[in-house]
Amino acid sequence: MENAVEQLANLPGVGRKTALRLSLFLLSKEPSFTHRLTAALDSLRDGIVYCCRCHNISDTELCPICADPKRDCHTVCVVQTVSDVLAIENTAQYKGLYHVLGGVISPIDGIGPSQLTIDALIERVREEGVQEVVLALGSTMEGDTTNFFIYRRLSGLDVRVSVIARGIAVGDEIEYADELTLGRSILNRTSFDDTLKH
Image (cartoon, rainbow, N blue to C red; front, side, top):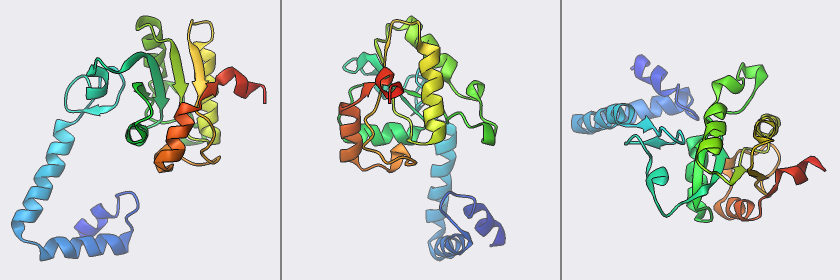
C-alpha cells in the first residue's frame, strides 16, 4: 500500500492524502478494473511517440495535425508543451501547424536552448516554406526570454514572426487560459517587432 501511495503522489497535483484515497479506491474495485487501468497506462507509454516533424504526441510517426492536408502549412505556432497544442486546438481558431519546444529557456532550472527543439524549428522554417511563426509561449519571464531567443535566431530569414495577443495574464501558462481568451489571442496576434518597441 505504501508503495502505491508513494508512486501516485508523484503525479502532478496529487499529494499524499489524495494518493491514499486513490489507492483505497483502487483496492475497492474489481481486479479487472486495475488490470484494465494498468494495461491502459502501459499502452500509453508504449503506443505514443513524438511526431518527427512538430514533436506533438502521436501514435504514428507523423501526427494527425501535420498529416492533415487542409492545415495551413505556411504558418507554424510555437508552443511550450503538448498541453498547449490541445488548448489551442480546443479554440478552433487556428488552422496552421505547430512546433512543440518541450519547455522554455530557464537557466535557473538548467534548461538552455540546446535542450529544446529550437534547432529543429529553424530547420523547418528554412526547408518547408514557412511564412509565419506564431510565438505562443506563456507570459512568463522564461517564455519571453525564449520568444526573444527564437526571434533572434529567425532574424535574417524570410519569415514573419508574430506573438499572440496578451489577453493572457502575465505569469499565466497557455494551457490554463480559457478557450475564448486563448482563441482571441491567436486571432489578434501581432508582429514580434511591435512588442520590442514597447
